Length: 92
Image 1 (cartoon, rainbow, N blue to C red):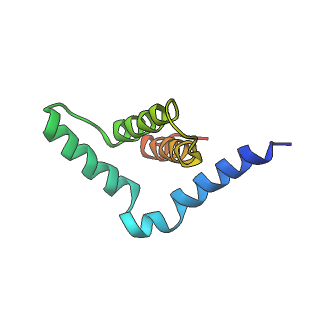
Image 2: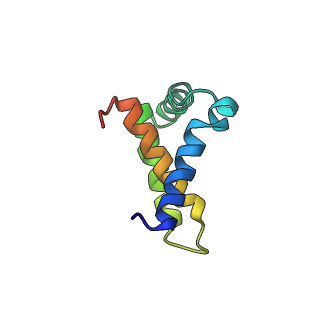
């Protein structure tokens, strides 16, 4: 079977991306669309909502390289990639 810690990370990512976070922050399309617009204006180049997800994942990956182990970084990275797949219209 799947090792317990892996399953816990995946379950937590699913819980976060489908639960109360959306109630708190709005739909992923709205939230990541707004971030993409702000980042695009700031850097003067087009950033898509999917790009935002990938860049947030990279931020979480960078955090795993230094300092204390924070399981939330792994959970959040998985969540961002799940949202990126949804925004991109990926079929699983």
